[in-house]
Image (cartoon, rainbow, N blue to C red):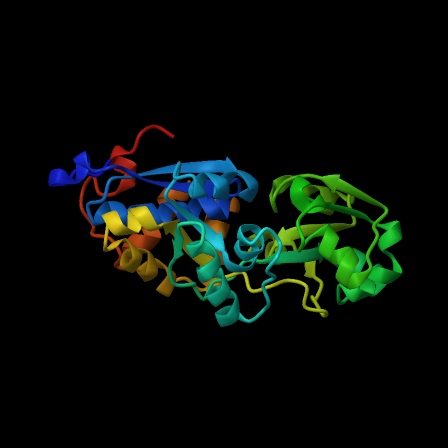
Length: 296
């Protein structure tokens, strides 16, 4: 915990992350900036899916979560409100929906990370696939792989059926845009995968992202969500989180992901290096969350 006068006597700000590397990096980006400002911070990485993390946020068990606008709106509204590719419209509705749950949102980053329907170059060439619509001709011959929650998520299998009429030969539950899904796709164990648009392996492995030609996927800008109570206790919190968002582009996020996923750097190290390079934290010995957080 970052020590600074009375800071250690104040309640810690707990930042929760979903169970995939990018979310963990984002949590540490936020945490390092808050710790640098003297706030007591801890990170709980890899907590699980949105179905576990967001209720914990609403219950006050954690105070901050790096979220994604479209999926967050779908979840918090219990599916009654649907996000669109329009960023401003999605964020506006999200803000009011979160407020009704005792939560606030910060500034959306330019960085987006949404669902990508991906095939290998060989599969794309064999079936002449360019768009998700093109899958309609061959879906019943292909196995689809993705996170287990894909079965129920409106922007995954239910949406692919509703918007594109896709019925795959089989669904194989794997992980959330992670190594199991990528390995299964490259090995030919599945023919189509749900990955994330910032996955560095897409470029590195020459995978093909099929164009979402019917606009199923919404705006998925990275956005901090936090409790109104913690915002009241720490008035500078919003400005500090917004400063991170202001510097995050999609290309930046993809690069951060590559450092973790391709070069095996620890998320906490990647986050601290980037915050320092951006001038968001001061360079000094023992600085930041790595120096004093409880064991992870």
